Amino acid sequence: MTEIQTCGKPIDSLLEKVLCMNILSSDYFKELYRLKTYHEVIDEIYNQVDHVEPWMTGNCRGPSTAFCLLYKFFTMKLTVKQMHGLLKHPDSPYIRAIGFLYLRYAADPKTLWNWFEQYLKDEELNPYRFGNSNVGSYFQLLLIVIGP
Image 1 (tube, rainbow, N blue to C red):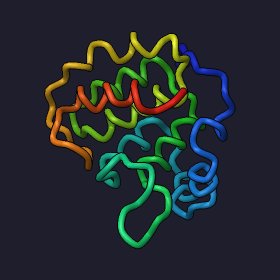
Image 2: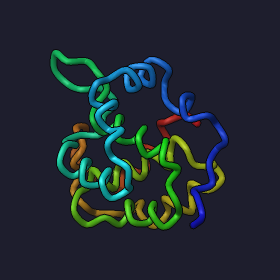
Image 3: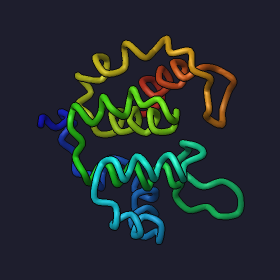
Image 4: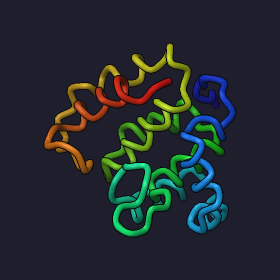
């Protein structure tokens, strides 16, 4: 199976340094070592993720479950087939969003348009904690806001 063409950066430099250090030291991320397959990680996203912001909300300011699971996927080096499965997943917009975050942070920037283009007009209701737009608008922001 063909792996996603990456930007070539080491995984510990894909995210902001403080966020990365907090993910690697979090008890939740350490619990994720038990997940060995792509499908187990998808099930965990479905059961545990309720937003895709990098940090937990409220008084606990640790890394979010979404970003711990995103980092778990970084360690697994997803294939093209697996990525298509994430982006088209019907059960949770969070599964799809983590797929797009993976691409935005880890994929070769020259390949992003090919991945994102067909989803930019996606009308699924935006489940993210900012704005009242649709998922396509969120994906557009990923292309614009997050630096390479």
